[in-house]
Image 1 (tube, rainbow, N blue to C red):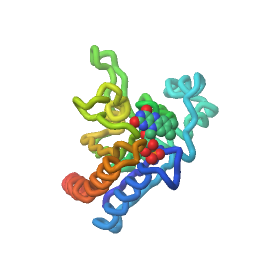
Image 2 (cartoon, protein in one colour):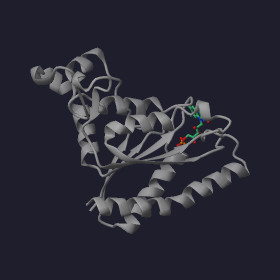
Image 3 (tube, rainbow, N blue to C red):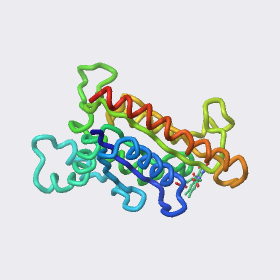
Length: 218
Ligand SMILES: Cc1cc2nc3c(=O)[nH]c(=O)nc-3n(C[C@H](O)[C@H](O)[C@H](O)COP(=O)(O)O)c2cc1C
């Protein structure tokens, strides 16, 4: 039985394209595997707080952490537990100002934490950080208003959304990283409709491939 963690980051609800994509992905997943476990975390509706100086001190306090510091990290612990329990982490990621929404960045900041999701050891030389989680699939379903954010596209150098999430996903334990995106949202023209169709049509094959991988890993 697989366990999927669905993260939605759009500040919009009803008219959000990324929410429609993640809903379609989950529906397809459940169609193929009725008893899969789905955990939902809506960071768009309820953004995690930004980390503070006290939060950082608590995260680095290690075994000397006091009860107040434990309380400060309670949400972070809960969010990390959700990631730990999942086989697949599905992220609905709108592009805001060429990167991820602040709410999604706040979620990553709460999760990428010393001795929970990474270890740090200078004995490793110039690469002291090592992820502690492994064996997870990460899927990003994105949407943006412009177009040409793919490699060699006219906006390739402005795509700070997918590369940033891909880099951070290493600390979610990502063994694989897949993404697709709806383009041209701001144009609302035929190109947008075609891009939308293409993205939704790609979901069944993506789910089938990933479920094969999850089944192999079980
Ligand atoms: C605050 C905000 C910032 C945005 N910034 C960009 C941007 O930098 N580049 C872009 O192509 N589209 C941008 N857009 C368009 C969104 O990426 C697009 O509307 C997308 O569909 C949002 O995802 P959603 O439909 O799930 O809410 C922005 C939209 C909003 C609301």
